[in-house]
Amino acid sequence: MKNNLTLFALCFFVVLSAKTGAQDTLRLGKTVFQELYERPEEVVELTIETPFRNIIQKKGLEELKKATLRYTGGDGQPVQHELQIRARGNRRKEVCYFPPLKMKFSKSLLTQAGYAPFHEIKLANSCRPGEINNLYLFKEYLGYRLYNLISPYSFRVKLAKITYLDVDREGQSTELYAILIEPEAELCARLGAQVIERKLTYGVFVEPDHLAQMEVFQYMIGNTDWNLANRHNMATIKAPERTKLIAIPYDFDYSGLVATDYAQPNETLPIQDVAQRYHKGDAFDPETIRQVVENFLGLTTPFQQACRDLTPLSPRAAKETEAYLAPFFKMLNDSKRMQQVFVEKIN
Picture 1: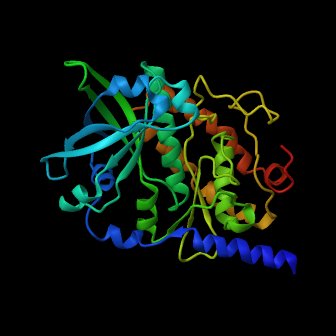
Picture 2 (picture 1 turned 180 degrees about the horizontal axis):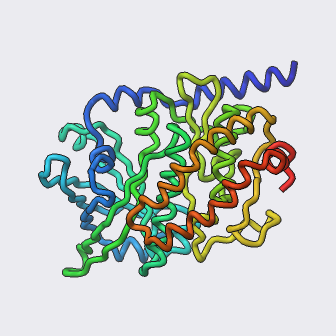
């Protein structure tokens, strides 16, 4: 009886913590992210005028600064938005010279210009100057694209080359690659879903098939930098066609697939390097894992093709990425090993 009451209370809390109405706002018009996402070029070019050096120097304060965003719209005409921008993030903000940023638009200005009022877009810049840091970013972008192949419940992303014009230092500019990440509210509107803002989320409240495919994906890319309970690098949504929640991963810079020079596994884990695969999640029933394996086997070729088709990756980097994924593809055909890892939790 006590367990039933607890379950009822937690489910009631899920209902109370869901944000509704996002789907209606999407119907008001286009969105800034959608406009950039639908550009035919793989890397969209943007210009942002802002006190960029000040943002970098005071990134820990996450102060909002005025900014102007410029790009070419789908009709070939110039587009300009007045907005605010600030540093964001946790560990990446500390270790990277160029912090990840959040752009905050004015809802009223967006509406006046015919856009839906999804007013926040996150972006992740290359961590530091240099080609190796661009490579890290391209591989993280690939991680998002691989998960797009696995599930429609995933964040869309767009690669960008951003020229930051520093308004405090005339003539000074910085050119960086960046990943534009679909706003969570926009993702929910696209899927007709609801944002869930619970502080704690447990596996019992998440759809088991989607939870399993998400955790197998994290294992595939060698990522242990996530936590479902406190939603670390994890969004949770409620889709109308599902009775339980769906967990959606993001931020893959600590994965073995990306292998940044600052990535280290948590000291509580029995691995020494992020390139080592380790399943830190739930134990699943054999049938759930069988279905997930079948799905991943069907995606082996699309996964490999995604590595080769990402033009910013050099042929050598694409081969290295495929080589990292190859042992996982081989493991998919080893039913005993898959059961050990994901059913019995014997890593």
